[in-house]
Length: 253
Image (cartoon, rainbow, N blue to C red; front, top):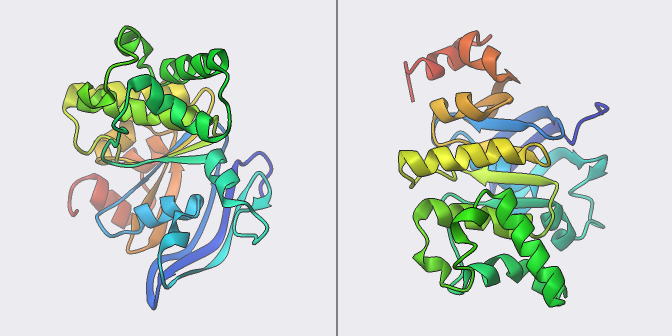
């Protein structure tokens, strides 16, 4: 196991019944970096993300082989408490899903579930999370209005803030800009670059261009296989595998 890695994945394969979605993934993800998993549709990227905080447990007939370690802990060890794991590794999905309540209550929802009910402490946590998600200045005067009145890009950053309020260590993002306009997309990307100062971020990007803009390191997935991974400048300018080169240059996908 590599020293200094936040997540270490060894020979990890994943199956939906008899259909294999991931094939012997080997990968180290470092602390406080943005790692992007990119590739064509149905290449295993979302399964890869969901495996990292065991959202795949919810799928009937799913199974895996191999291991995933978080700070040396095997996340599939039966003794691991799922709620604790998912607090440490939070996930933001492609479509923003604010709760039908105020901006404040959206962000405070998780801490309240964790029995943090002191108003001053809640207020501090909400402000910190909104600042980290680069949303505070836009919503500080309407914290108690409905979150459903925010723009799409603001709603997505609110969903990021909602995860940050749980004080995770790792953020998983599955195409968080897929439904957003270019200006909102730029806001999310700037937010991610700010967040990597404090968090490890694993992103399935909207497209190759987004991957190349925000990634420190990147991995190309194809048919459930991690074809190659490395520093983003190398993957996107001098890939070692012809399949990666064909994809990033637009010859397929």
